[in-house]
Length: 302
Ligand code: FAD
Image (cartoon, protein in one colour):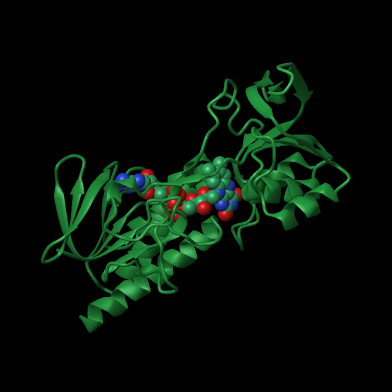
């Protein structure tokens, strides 16, 4: 059996596996796609100490670093269930069962997509999901934010300080974001809020050039010219495969304590699949390190 079995091969999983392996304990890593969301990212400018890099480049560096250690890497393998017997048993979709004394779950998350024409086509060509990451790429330009919840309004406030103008589109008749955020938003001179606005299509040629929406009150179809569209309708953590055996919050994120421990002793979780406050590469790597050190601590005490 493994001492530590890491499920997920993004920044959190890579960090956890390296930290575990450095303790000289038997470490395995199962990943559907080594690199995780980083593979889908264009430019990364906030991975501290690296001024600027590209997603695939950072993903390759992660892989190289992991492969420098004695870690059993099972790439392109999807976990489908976890059970506690004598040891933890992780079942893979290919039927294999892996046994381990401790498990670190780092299966990440995916942005909720709006599924309108143009979204997939212009991803990374004007369609963006992460304002911290991609906001500066739209400096001085006009952008839209789809979604009037907390993340949408936070994104709009953040972007308003960088871009020329922000249009917020909310499907419902009012914004769901906290009052204090709405107040801040409405105090900004370069923001327009459209409620009852149903996004129909993201338009463009090589890159995004605008967005078509239906005014649900009048039924009229309207088009706005834009350089970028930020889709902010939530994140979906990749945790469904775990069922209800450990505590998850109402959006499915695994609840962890400050040691990255879950509600099952011996099972730790790190990165975007947890209820951590912010989803960023550097944050995920930090929590991966915490999870591995806590797993080691658990092993020497049990
Ligand atoms: P992920 O990167 O999601 O990795 C999850 C891993 O788990 C993957 O290997 C996946 O294949 C695997 N997995 C999932 N389910 C299973 C399963 N059932 N069995 C086995 N393996 C599974 N952050 C920044 O700091 N700076 C940026 O500039 C930036 N830009 C971004 C741009 C985009 C387009 C996106 C999508 C995200 C961006 N982020 C950025 C956020 C950052 O990528 C994430 O916070 C980070 O990747 C989270 O790391 P993670 O390891 O927790 O999860």
